[in-house]
Image 1 (tube, rainbow, N blue to C red):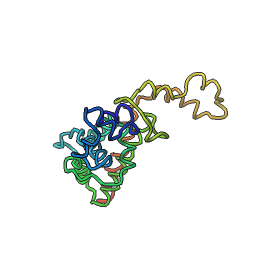
Image 2 (image 1 turned 30 degrees about the vertical axis):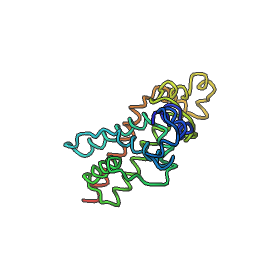
Image 3 (image 1 turned 45 degrees about the vertical axis):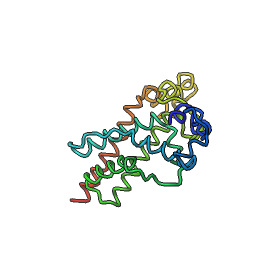
Image 4 (image 1 turned 135 degrees about the vertical axis):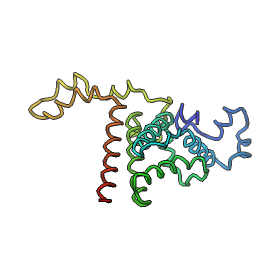
Length: 213
């Protein structure tokens, strides 16, 4: 996991892992079947990094804290998103499955049946992963080597329109874009994440109320 976080998925190999732990590559096969088995373990370790919020509160508060925690985990290990996309086998370790169990349990508390719960789970998960992918600049380069355990917010803001860009825009041609530029440059990533998350959670709550009334 350390190699993946620091250097990206392409750097992870049986030979490289063996070198870093000071053994011959063949020695690893006493503990894992192959590289896929090794990467399954990496996925499980990332899942086990999830810290569970206190559930003795209204579901929407628990869901909000759970989403923020999942964003933290993915920002710590952003390359795991590409790893999950490439995996062909589901995880089977019980501890690694508990974050999913937690999320579905919270969604059930909101009043969703199992089928709707899966839809909500996928929507929330897609939102969180999408935000993290944009934050780490991986939207168009999933699977490439990206070092660093935390998001470089300066790099995120560097991609936003600057004053030189703004001078080339005409308020007559793109008035909405010109009006939005100052706010794009000042947009705080945490505020943006919470804003979108609240839209989703309030929408889920409204749907439950409508379906039961």
